[in-house]
Amino acid sequence: MQFLLSKILLPLLVLLTLSTISFAENSQTNLDEQLSLVDYLGQVRAKNLTIISSDADKISNDRLAKKAQLITAFRLYGFSDRSFAEQNPALQFFRYSKVYKQNNQIGISHNSRYGLESNVYYLFNSTNYKDFAFAGTQNSLVARNSQATPSIELNLSLWQNLFGASTIANETSIKSNYNALKMQAVALSLQEQLQAEQSYWQLFFCRKSLEIQKQALASANKILDYIDKKAKMNLAESSDILQAKAMVQSKKILVQQAENQLKQAELDFNQKRNLPNDQVPELLQSPSLTDLQNYDFQQNRVGDSPFLLAKKEQMQANIASAQLEIQNQKPMLNLYTSYTHNVAEGNRKQAWQNSFASNNSADSATVGLKFSMPINFMLTNEISDGAKQKIIAERSNYQKHKLQHEIDWQNLNFLGINLQQNLILALNLVNIQKNKLQNERSLLAKGRTSTYQILVFEQEYSNAELGLWQIVYQLQQNIINRKLYEYHSTIN
Image (cartoon, rainbow, N blue to C red):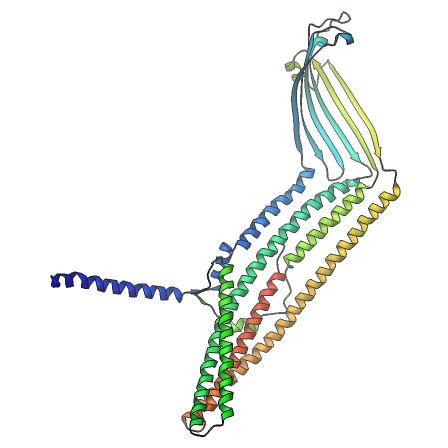
């Protein structure tokens, strides 16, 4: 029995052990998987709710801006109705019991961008008098007829909306308002992506900072141990021990701060890709120090910040609204004309066939002027002047934002160049501290220096290295911030 159990259980235990080891190895592989910046930003664009929402707003406002085209679009309209009425005995001129009517109309209207309104329509009406009796005529069309009436109407603005000023202003107001909302959505999406890129490098720096701080703490503990041993041999002062202990405590504080900053960086990192946890198992790529040193901060800027473009579109929308208000205060003087060709036949088919040529036709035409204006001239002048002042205010406000935009861009360039210079100095300092530490270790091997001196040099090397990565992080952030000012507008 024991033999059978051993034959069965032993392979199962081995298999279970191998599976556990394999699972642990796979887990470790996942933990060590490298996540590039490109892949991380891909995750952010796919899962970040702010970006998804902003991109949807961009598409929405881009399409809603086409509402401006409806102002000058051709419009098809029509109606159809049927009615009857009994004759009022008190108002008899000729006798009938009931009259049936059917009216139909279809037409196309159009408002030109240059102030011309046109309307082309076709009327098709039928009239039928029941029990018709009138001794004065033998024409059967009086009792029953169908009328086809093609017509054209034109209306031209000669003062208000001259050359389509109101139409163009209204069109611009609608389009620019939606374009402003579109650019705001673009700005929020781009800003979120740039913040995600900043989170990537912030996490890398926090990891590097914690690594350096732990090395510095280990070195400080070695110094404390070294001095403590010297003190036991009466070769060190108590002040040296207190100073070493203070150094250890300060390094512990820095390690604790670095751990807290790392935890916050991991939260921000995962939040950008919509992951509700505070752990980032992936490894991150290291920034290229060569690329940072060679980055050209003097290159010409292509495009502007989408925030500034949104301000520009909003300015144009507000100016268009003010211009529309100015037009509305002007007197209305319109030239209008119309021409109608009316055909009357005994049945619908003949009326339809002879719509444009028939003996039973009657044409009519109209030409006229229409005028309207408010009598209170002072009030309309004040309103117009208020709209003109609004235009001045909008242009000045936009110029203020544009100037600040240029100043911020120049400040980024100036800071970037200074950081590049500091990067070169920091690299030289790290190399010097590294060579100094290596040289001191060589002297220690020859018995020509002390361990304490090496530990002090390790502290100096750690501080120099930490300073280098701080500059790298600041330079990386500067380059990312520049991207917000280089958006290429595609507004049509």
